[in-house]
Amino acid sequence: MTATTLVVGLGNPILGDDGVGWRVAERVREAVDDPEVDVLCLSLGGLSLVEHLAGYRRAIIVDAMTTGAAPGSLHRFAARDLDELGVQHTASVHDLSLRSALVFARESGLDLPEDIRVVGVEARPEFEFGESLGEAVSRAVPLAVAAVLDALQA
Image 1 (spheres, one colour):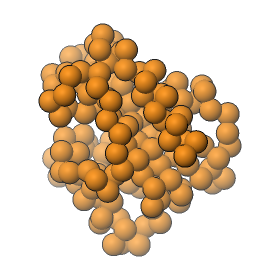
Image 2 (image 1 turned 30 degrees about the horizontal axis):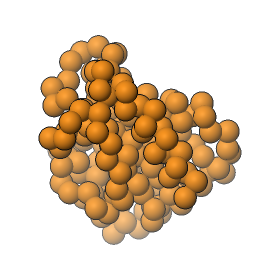
Image 3 (image 1 turned 135 degrees about the horizontal axis):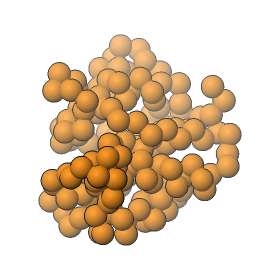
Image 4 (image 1 turned 180 degrees about the vertical axis):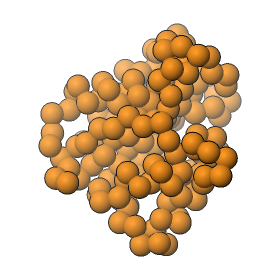
């Protein structure tokens, strides 16, 4: 591995707004021509996600969120500030939230980035089958891309 930074777009690209993480990651991939940055689109969470972070110095995770804010709102925070709300995007009810998975993996000796940031786009709480994003979430994609590019420059 030569890259030191990983950008991960999470979600399900055929579940409406839940695909926003993939859309943002795809645009970041087009905008960044840097061998130090890898970009992945994944449909998993918890321990499965954390395994992909191993070996990188930093990571930026982009995902849909449902916190009650207006759809399209942007959230930016460090992964260490996550609460257990992250459990809603795990691949299985038997998996861990991102925060719990990070703690477990670190305690198990997995080489994880110290700098893990999350860019969340507020989605409508109900997801619909289809590849289209809602209007508000679609308008937020360029803002989320800019937030990721800013984080890459930091």
